Length: 86
Image: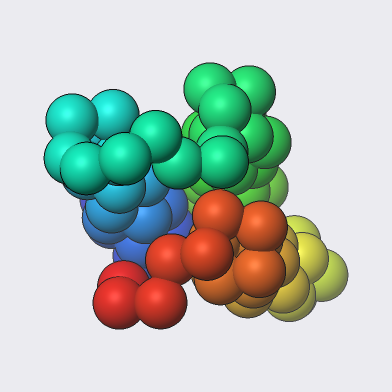
């Protein structure tokens, strides 16, 4: 937990876990399935590694890719999973 990418991806992954647990326990069955959570889970690990490589080497391209990936994770959560409150 040394770079901002570590903290950001961990926070997004924790939010993903909370959404999954809330939807698996509360109310009527939701339309999302377990495999809907796989792309953002894997994506957060990949984005963290790309961001860490860019942070350590000073590579601007890797950091731009990592920030774009974080935006893509947020967009996936909003549009695919329907998470409006995170």
